[in-house]
Length: 149
Picture 1 (cartoon, rainbow, N blue to C red):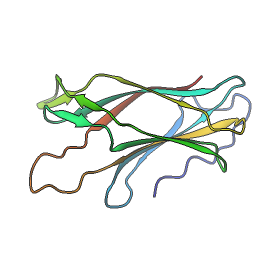
Picture 2 (picture 1 turned 60 degrees about the vertical axis):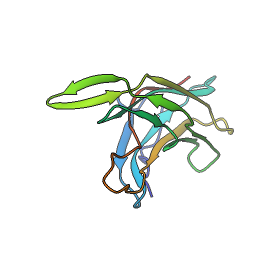
Picture 3 (picture 1 turned 90 degrees about the horizontal axis):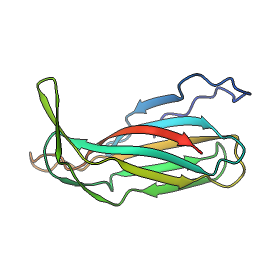
Picture 4 (picture 1 turned 180 degrees about the vertical axis):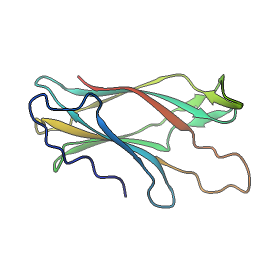
């Protein structure tokens, strides 16, 4: 269960300065998700974005908890599950808290078929089940540079 994208119609240049987005929490194992509706211009073929995994401890994480879906509203969709191991080796201080970050990952997905005028991009995570008091193993993600080209 996620958050339905905005129902605001796409009309020539009437999009807000920032894409419409939302964070939502779903069923028990679903983690945070990001859903964005983006306009598609003639000649666009790809969705591109940058991800940076992070956690509150230094480790190597698997990105298999992240799924990226690109869909035409009411039409076709393309799905990609991230399958990588990423070391979190960069320590960053956030106030008094320590955060460990991995390298920036580039993600590219082809647009779904159908010549859409707009798409919905959904990034969803799955939380690991509780593991008897040990640190959680699923990373969080910083999302940047999400665009259609």
